[in-house]
Figure 1 (cartoon, rainbow, N blue to C red):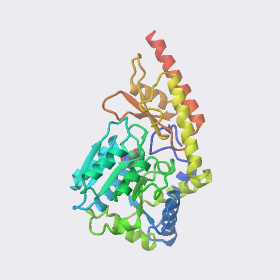
Figure 2: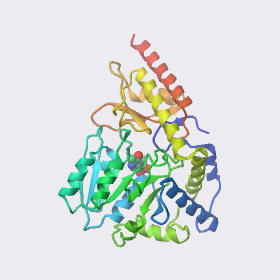
Figure 3: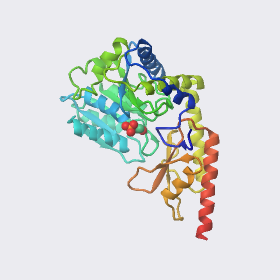
Figure 4: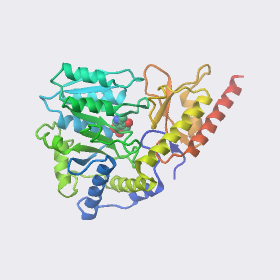
Length: 368
Ligand SMILES: *Cc1c(COP(=O)(O)O)cnc(C)c1O
């Protein structure tokens, strides 16, 4: 069994009961298995507060990026243009997807410690009528900042454009009323806040917008509409599906419900995060993101000031005592990250804090 817990934003620490689901081999065209896929699709719509009349859920093999690439390459046509609002590596990755697929786009790049400004998005849309779609990340896992997709969604809807959201590291841990917030396509994956294991992504799609994307897809395996057509019939995936992962995910969804749904999971994550920042601050680690914009998923901390600090040494010390951290992803500052999602509770944060206190104490003795 596990020798350490993951304080990373996915893959993350899952329950033993989720992992146990993977001990059984299943057949991809068996009715029981296909029924599991259909149940998952219905549960995902419920989590997004949307009805089957207006929305539909598509599961897509591969990691989260496959889901984002599937949407961008399937719904933004050659005659369309997508405005990508970025403030981190995952937003920037969307521009790379567009480059590779020759998808027309414009890029509004915000600095990593600021959120994309809804008023700026409104101006960009007013200035350029050729823009048909807007894409942005909700929880930018690069820094831990939580973007205001509700305000941007309103701007996009008022301007009559289509809104694509990468809610990879927030869906299931932060409540997102998908339709109310004007989201037409929302992408997330199995191994983040739903607390499943890696292997597929999923997309909540506004039905009419999905259906009107006919003929736009640039890839066979990532063709969103084609994948949906197969799945909608009877729950059969077009190509081999990650059967073990699907069963584990189904269990994880049931466990989310048993915990009390998204509100309860959000409370646990938010408390983990609040406690983490309080404890870390007390030990001299300042967070990179301003408190009001800090999301409840992952936190970026600066290396402590005035002490020689090596992340690899820090990492190993903590790993040997039961927890794994994440390196920073910023290019302009020395930082590391601590995720607080998955099967992680305030007791874990307390333990982590005492391990870090031990590291600092040992380190100070060495220097002295
Ligand atoms: C995890 C994540 C992704 C997907 O990354 P993969 O490595 O492909 O799973 C995309 N966007 C965000 C914001 C993420 O946190």
